[in-house]
Image (cartoon, rainbow, N blue to C red; front, side, top):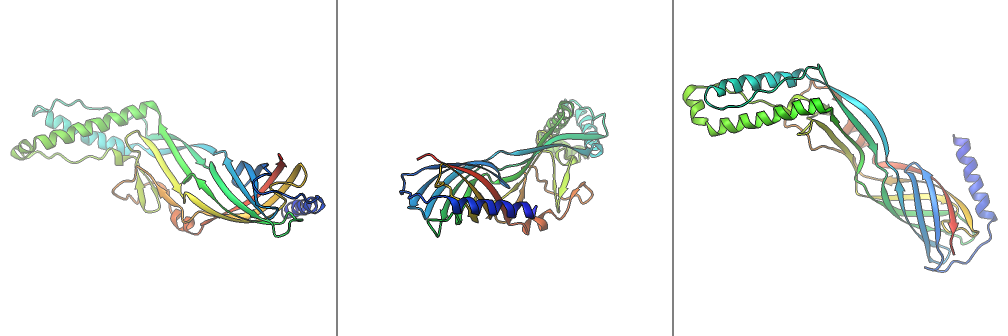
Length: 302
């Protein structure tokens, strides 16, 4: 791989050195480019702002890369919570609650089909500085602007599981409302009506935080980074080639800060026995830069 990269760099330098110098006029010449690199594919438009030395480059990177997988949860705790809920409902129905019990899941596991996505969709604004008007060697400074979700994980359970889960949530809400409205009855007859936690019965851990499946029996998590991500790079070849078509090679790095895990389904308790992964935060705190290597085909419109 190292030999291939060095060969490509040598080709880029040779192409740049052999090209005839064309005087560029600020805000008059325009170039376009298509690229492939460690930030996916992209398109660009470029324009000189100070003759041959300083070029403004605007572009967009895409697409998102998706990977589908299944995540399984033990249904035991959910069925236990449903049993507790049904038992309490039977008890309060004797006092006129009139609530209907719900069925447990037949399976031992709840499977959620998820999509993990690497989100590359961002706009970028760059300035390329060419120390020599006769060479394609340049420095690039700029920023990637856009998507804060670097990696997202989303998925829902099957329709049968969703129906059972949402029915249990609905009954739990009605049960809680009855308890609140009939506090005097509960106190008068000394009823033992425990709290239930349907949302917290299907859970997974990331580091020392437990997450549930929310209202829709769905996984919802993301690794978030800065919206504005500064960039510095060094490259060969011109964004606006001296000839009609040119080639660029560039290496650099984006600074995206310390990634953070966010989810709308974070639970208010931690279950150390739940399945999950540990050490994510420590690893992410050390990865504040994203390397970039780009191969770009450029063209000059006028």
